[in-house]
Length: 207
Image 1 (cartoon, rainbow, N blue to C red):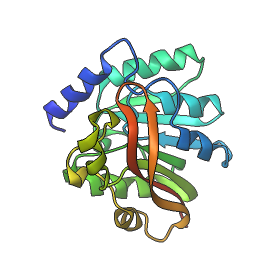
Image 2 (tube, one colour):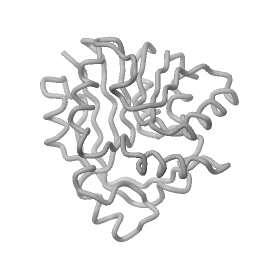
Image 3 (cartoon, rainbow, N blue to C red):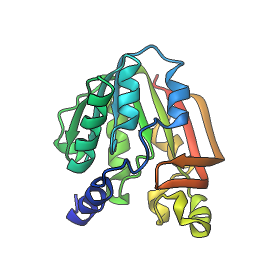
Image 4 (tube, rainbow, N blue to C red):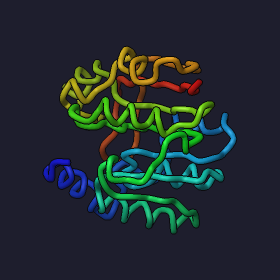
């Protein structure tokens, strides 16, 4: 993982306030209600808002990110809400996750560099149990138009880091699709997700 990429996120998460707020993503919060708590993985989890929420619902939570500053904030948040999360720091290939281990994987604005994007999503497919669920919300390729109009909405500014419905169908082919849409939403998450954006939302169950 390139050091400048790590430094970027360490800088974002080093402030006293939470960059994307302390409250969970609304789409994740809504979807988790439909599933019985089990083991769940949060890739690119940042400051832990989503992982802590899931732990509070009774999920056994694993999370990872490249940012030690993000991990520090996540552990603070977990302590505040009196929950336990297993939060690792490092590139995915260095972490001890195993095949068919998780009942759910939550990919919430998990935008990976293009060079590792496909490899990581292939790994997430392997880590998910049969009958397990992917819950996904991230910026679509159309989002570039929105961020050009309003930088406060956040998100990557390179097309390759953004998502299309075709990519999701490719990464998670053969899944039972509960929802797969590209839609415009209003975001109000901390200091870095504010305004109108375009996202892909996906809920899929692994056969």
